[in-house]
Image 1 (cartoon, rainbow, N blue to C red):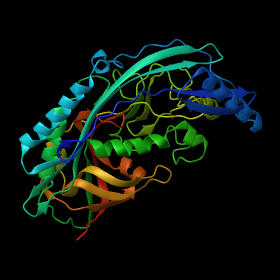
Image 2 (cartoon, rainbow, N blue to C red):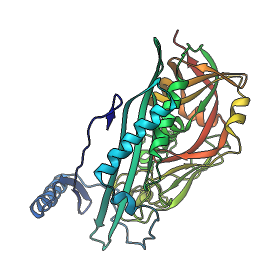
Image 3 (cartoon, rainbow, N blue to C red):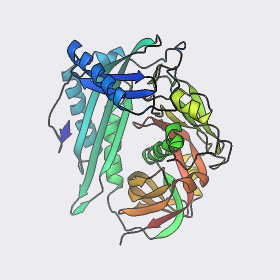
Image 4 (spheres, one colour):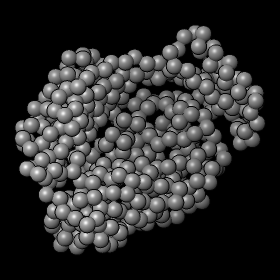
Length: 407
């Protein structure tokens, strides 16, 4: 880790954990333990069993799924990551500092990190499923700020993550530094209604929130406004969203999900029309649908990789049509899938007028509704980027958004 332009510390940890689900008739309980030994594993199973006996039956439970053939997803393990040594990570941290300073001496790295991990997931069930899979991950991130005399810009962040050793740590630092420089000479934004352009990170946050709305568990529990809307148009025809647990090298990819079912690629929204929800076997049976390989466990559901299909616009073309708007890289606030409320502060944002980026703005409030936002998507960029949020997304342009400036 790096703090205030200095390498502050290095850490190394080895962790193990065990999670047990016990099913007694229609009664289901789960327990977990870290620091796994034979004794602790037996105690964990005993605890889950006793908990299950004490619970009321889950009347919707119809049993574990039959094991199905597993197709191995590629690119989930990189030997180069697994064989990294601590001194190599330290050298990468030093190179990030040098890269940041090479952009400008006005920039300071307030915080940065380089990290990697290797993991193995092994799963077995009483239905005869038993598989294991190895994973690696590598990530780098930096937070920078620029100063020019008495002027201090807003904090600028950049991050990248991958299953393999293809993250350019120096470019991560340079991007953070360039963003910090761009955030100098802040001006207040006016209050207006206009166009919102979501850079990759903000777009990833929005689609992460949306994924909870098409989560079959949330639909069943009555938390999602998208309940009962399969087959209906819920978004702009420009928008197609896919959940893909089989994406080669995807941060959310696995060969089998949390109940042992094979992962798959599912089109969730196609040209604005809701096609399905993401499900495990439990929620699929309740909703009368097919499982999509999205089991977080035998009851709950989680997205894998969220893939937003690109448009045919360049970034310059997306900006050129904007009469008044904001280009926003970071967002601090809430995006509630339950009712769609969006409320928060735009950061690393630029005011746009007549297709031109005019100036970086001080914190500006964005208000609106998630479900109106996706209906008002007017353009998507050709270029897409992976994000650490397990979302692959283009830049997204949304119309009729309210902004409240801070004077």
